[in-house]
Amino acid sequence: MPRRVLNAFLTTALLATALAARAAAQGAATTPTGRQVAVTFDDLPTPYGELEDMRLITTRLLESVRRNNVPAVGFVNERKLYRRGEMDARTDLLRAWLDAGLELGNHTFSHINLQKAPLADYEEDVVRGETVTRMLLAERGMRLRYFRHPFLFTGTTPEYKKGLADFLAARGYTVAPVTFDNGDYIFADVYFKAKKRGDMDTAKRVADAYVPYMESIFEHFERLSSETFGREVRQVLLLHANEINADRFDELAAMMRRRGYSFVTLEEALKDPAYSEPDALYKNGISWLHRWRMAKGMPVRWEPEVPKFVDDLYKAGQGGG
Ligand SMILES: [Zn+2]
Image 1: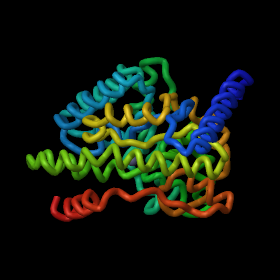
Image 2: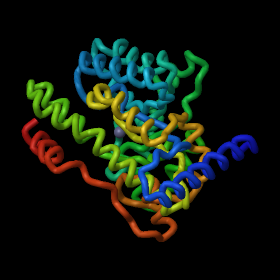
Image 3: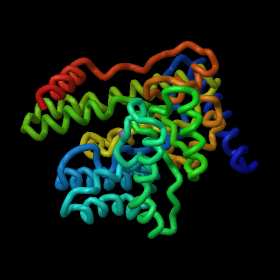
Image 4: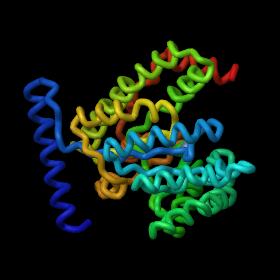
């Protein structure tokens, strides 16, 4: 890390610690400053929907991301581009991210499930997922550099995990870990389906519960970060390019600003030394804060669940469509 960046980082970290200490001493909910978060969106162009849904979601989401000056990275599943007669239109949705000044990364071609795929198949899916994204980035003089694991699965065994990590590094990828892991996709599924069937009461009830739930996730991982590192790390937020974020990102961004966050690039966030810490092997997709704690032998403290009424609707919708 260059000295200037290190100094800036240490100043920020010290300031955050001092403010946190003061807030604790006062026993008051003083608004902290100096918190930093990188925002990332997975499953581009969108996790679900037909072309018209994809267009609406992408347009509204990018308008909000731009309005809030958030230097986000979007992670692509190129398989979603391959629809007869729609390839150009779907590819243009990815171009829109670059037009908005944002960056694209690889999320594998097919959103492959590592738990069901041998390493060789997984690696092939990574390579296959590069084709269009690499071309679009090259059009702007940019390089494909970030990789996000589908489901945040990084390996089933130490050998698999190391083999994949070595493969990604050799192909020039930087892995994009997540600290603010959450269930936005659960809200999104219920919200999208409620809107589709014209049930606006349910859609509104679910959407109104979304940002308060996300704030509970922030509170949890901020505390966990302080407990683990004695300070709050630069966080990485995982969101999906879905409709609830298209409709509620303004509100989400306002919540983050209210909590003292500034929006930084993924590159800046990953300069936090926490991201060089060992991350434990774990069978499921979990926050890197959990992985770092496991590697240090610290107890697991899981984040808050999605509200029960949302989860019930999600499970009902999974069965009945
Ligand atoms: Zn994904």
